[in-house]
Image (cartoon, rainbow, N blue to C red; front, side, top):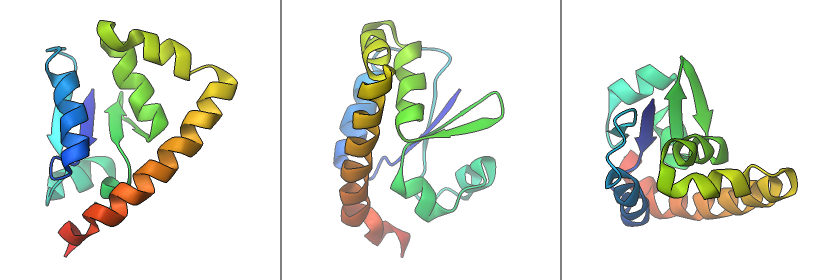
Length: 114
């Protein structure tokens, strides 16, 4: 499973580093910063990759909250987050909250697109 994240964003980097510490072999961490290979592998533009977290699993690309759920499901320490945030009402609240936070992080980091 490939995880596409923005290593140039301090907030994103800090969170991903927590997951990396768990040393899950099946998670391949890929920085999207000026990474044409990531764009080609996901069929997403640099803007789309910068806007949200992406995970590629079994040839399918998952975006945003669905990407987080896949990551949390793989990491035993964070599996409780997967179980909680996949609940229907919680999932929708999480989705809205994520989109708001992701939008502001995108605004903060969009300068790297130039």
